[in-house]
Length: 173
Image (cartoon, rainbow, N blue to C red):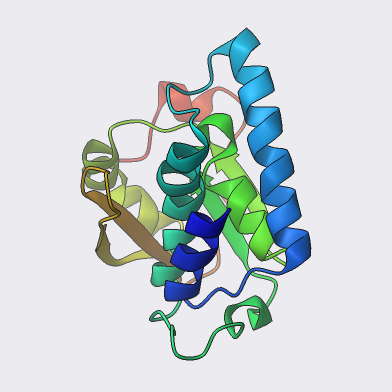
């Protein structure tokens, strides 16, 4: 896990021996379960470290600017609630949970992110969210990506959450 360890350090995350062990276990489980459920096409040891684990950890860029000269500051984050949109095979939520066990995660399946953003702006406003921005993410050997950062700025109105099935029939516009 040297590739992951070095990349994480550049993001200001100094991984402990216990966290590296958890990533080793995650890798072994991912490869084993992938044989049955075809979770990902990326299963090489190096590929998983970069394209899954490290890519997941780039989400910290939406929380604070990276602090490579001050490693080990990031685990001091408060117990935030984090919405993980696009949690296929547990990414990015599980790698983030390994590094930040104080976070509470909610996972949701992914769709076309740009379409989701355009379609979600009114819903974000109605539910008290604010689109802070999109941060480009570039890792060696990967296509450029966007990290979408949304801040919760107001309380959710009492009208929400709606009953099961209503959002699919009448999405917020």
